[in-house]
Image (cartoon, rainbow, N blue to C red; front, side, top):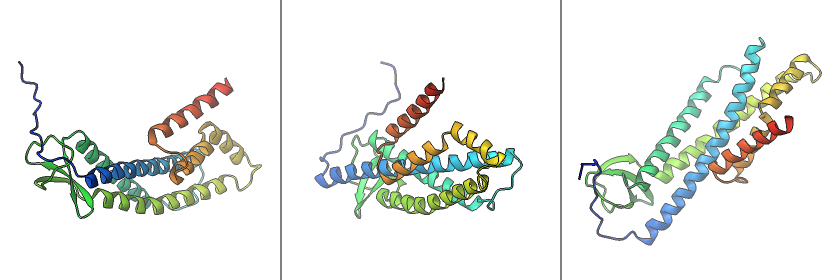
Length: 218
């Protein structure tokens, strides 16, 4: 038979403990909550980007200083989120292993080929140290970054419609409706608060909402 390049792993000689199984399930639930919250933040950032773009295109000065530091903190959160998702995905596919240590999981690329999710030895390259701790840090940073982006959105909205009868406000309201700003902000709030569960469901709901709105206009 031709060489497929697939390495067959030797099985680990012990079953996972009940603690490992229950804590892994808890970790997957925390991962989902983390992804929901970051997706909600993505929507808030997208709304601010649309508002800023409108101001620039219409020659309006922004009602706040360049939030370069805030943007970097947001991008850092996205990077950490990606690291967590890649590490957990690698463990679930058995490319990596999950090692339970000090009430947390380390994700390790083992020096031996071990065909199981949970590994009993910490030998290899650490891909992610402390999954629960990392997610906790992401959620801690998420709270402050989200609050600041919401303030910028509110300040820009008030700036654009400080005079509701002005041509700028009327023009903005047209763009605001076309870009589904209110729907995105409302959905982001419900996702962040836990009223809506699951990123996949969330994306489908947003897509469905936009499609329904377009259908009603046609």
